[in-house]
Length: 376
Image (cartoon, rainbow, N blue to C red; front, side, top):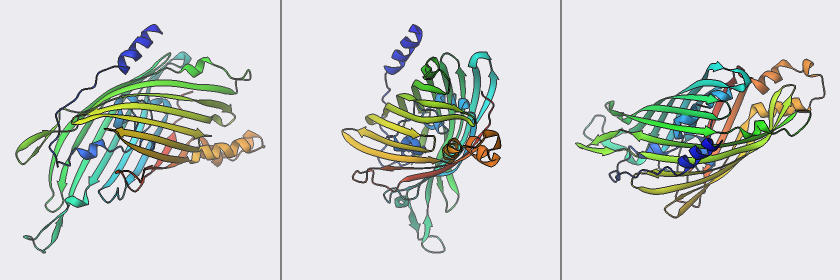
C-alpha cells in the first residue's frame, strides 16, 4: 500500500506542460476542447478520473477499465444544435469492452475500444461565393474528428488502466469537397483502489459499501500541426490531471446488483497551450441507478462558469419496479428482467449557466447499452 500511495502522490504533482499559443482566429483547434460527454459537461467538464463510455475523450487510460462495466454502448447522437448561435456540434460513438482473461478471486485483464465521430460547424464561417453558378452559393466550413481508441486494464487489489487514441481531424469545404486532414495522438493512465470490497455493511451480505478513489492523467493532441495559408500551427496540446471518489451503497437482489445510491465528487486541472490552467469541480448524485443529478464549475483565468445536468436511465427504473414487486422472483416477467439488467436506454442533458459568456442551448444525448454479463 505504501508503493500505491507514493505512485498516487507522484501523479497528483506531475507538472503540466505549457505550449506556445495558437494563431488567433484559427478555428480548427477550438472544437477539440469541446467535450462530447454530457455527463462531463454537467460536472464542469471533469472526466480524466471517471470511467464510462466517454472515457476515451479525456483519458484513453480510463477506457482501459471500461471493460469492468461489461457492456457495449451505442451513442447515435449527442451534442448541441445551437450553442449561443455560435456553432453546432454532433457526436456519435460505439464503445465495446473485450474481456481477455478472468482469474480467480476477482482478478481480470481486459481491453476496450471506441470508434467515434465529432463534427463541428461555425455558421459565422459560412461564406457566399458570387463567382460560381448559381450566384450566391454558400460555402460551408466543417471541422471533423474521427477517433479510434484502445484501452488496456487490470483489476485486482488495485485497478490500473492505460490507453491511447489516434485521431484524424481537419476541415471540409462542401462546395468542392476540398478537405485537409491531420493525425494526432492521445495517451493516458488511471489508478483506482476498490476499497469498498473490504467493508461489509450487513451480516446478511445483502448490502455492500462502494468506495472507489481514482486518479487519472492524460496528454492530448500530440505531434500535430495544421497548415494555414502556407504556415504551420500547432493544435491545442492539453495536459489533464484529475481525482475522483465514487462512494455509495450497493444491494445484492434476486434480479442482480442494484446501486441504491452513489455520490461522485471530482476535481481536475487542465493546462492547454496559450491558456492559463483551468480548474474544474463537479459532483454527481445517483439515485437507484435511475436518476443522476450533476453540478459543476469551471474556472478559467478568474472567470467561473457553473454547469448542471441530469441523466435518466431505464435500467434503474425497471430495477426499482422489480424491487417493489412482491411476487416470487422466478415468476417475474422476463421482459422486465431483460430491460432491468441487459438492455437499457439513457437520456442525458447538460447546460451551462446562461448568465455567463458560455450562454448556449443545452447538450443533449441518447445512448443504448447492452449488458454482456461475462463478469461475476
